[in-house]
Image 1 (cartoon, rainbow, N blue to C red):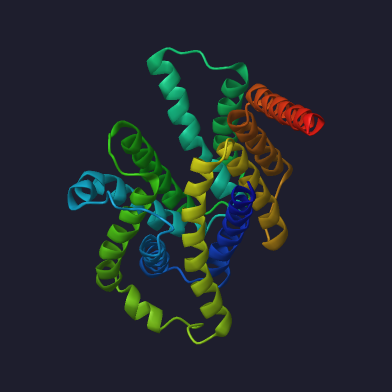
Image 2: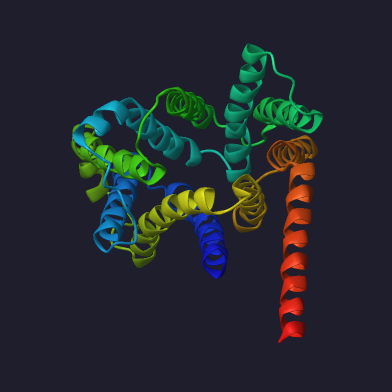
Length: 316
């Protein structure tokens, strides 16, 4: 129990810190060379997973050349996600970036309901509609609207939708950790030569803050934190009963903290859209009835165990 709780806290702290650190490097320090930035993060993730595998803490034995080839399209989508996402985040505030990209999952969910002709719960339906509508509205009322940033955000969401759909319909024996390792390896293999072909290596040598300590610390920390987020996210999804609840809570905290750390221009309309987007994700991800039922079941189990312990004590 304590191990699961520790993993949740590590994931939460890592997710919030990573998002803020990435925004700091991309926007404040203006290091906008995604092949190097994302290449470092994926290299760190691949190295960390391999080291954990060698030490016996993680198992990635099913990652074969054939499995990597089958998963290659998803890995290419993954590269598009991190590349376009890095470009978009350098221009767009964190609340807008996180809330607008939420509409991808909601749109896929709504499309699935229509195709399968299933009727979701009122809570999930309202949450999905609020998420999509608030994202569209936030796009139009963003007081810091940046054409280039939203251009890359569109590509980021397209790649994200492609990744989710491929992962859903492509049957594979790879575990979530093996998929992450495969994504990281292929990203390093393709981003390394890409940084040379796009001239990012030469641009990095001309970066004004290249010799500054705070840039080195932020850059190195971004890789370690990103690896920690990727690994602990999978452990949370596989080892907890409410992974969506945790993810939703952490994302909301990230949005609120970003408003305190970075300067974000807000109008009344933009603030209303942000609150609506948060409410939509909460309604979509957190099933109140299911949560209440599980908590009641957990309480009954504790009561039964307590009664059983008292009976044993009385007998002795």
